[in-house]
Length: 312
Image 1 (cartoon, rainbow, N blue to C red):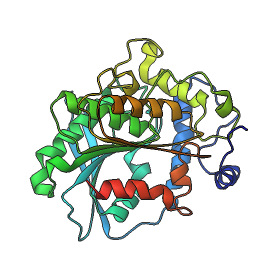
Image 2: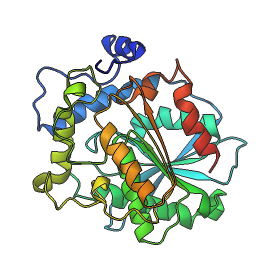
Image 3: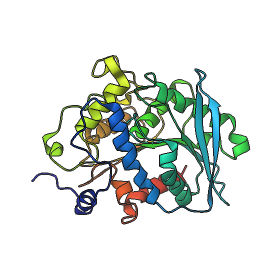
């Protein structure tokens, strides 16, 4: 029997939830993909805003002189000592701190853990590897100002969903390589592997929020002439990593009907084989972004993230 999409998700997609896949989308058009994904991400604005969560806009200088925009979120009366550096989704060609503002505020409201959101540079305009470089700069900035922000440097995690999960995984690799301790990498259906281009027949025919045509378009924009070759770096496509020893413990979750499922499971396996503690959840019947779609209907899909963030 073939995979069956969860009926609640199927109904939400039928009702217009998530990004549309218009008939005029042409594979390879990254800027059109950006418009499609950004339009879908505006649906996050429907999340309720908790008045106890405040934010502060910040600007820092990245290693190459780029002015990197950050946003620090904290909850009134909460001082856990831990913190998270968060990376938004959007296939590395779309998304922003502004579009993700309601979701990040929700995580802070639920957990009390402050979050530093990173407006990393996007493809195709940004140079290859700029997103992870921006993420590392944000992590280093947070560590340098940990005392004044009430943060224990040993209790900082990186987190992201979809492309943001991929950037978080890349930053975890760079942090390890720079001798920077991370408490956890929280990877939600992360986009890790530029080689995920051949459709799985069990998934290609199902309704989805992120089809293979979107994935191929995104990776071509990110990697350009290096797309699909052996030259992609782990700081861009973390699945290309060959040394998993010493990486931060991981929490990974993905839907059974997400095209990123296999690459995420393999990534978890490689972490385990390197002796890195990893918690993996594969949710039956669920596609990409299932947890956000069901945020108001099924708290089970938020419980894992809440538990992990509160345990930092």
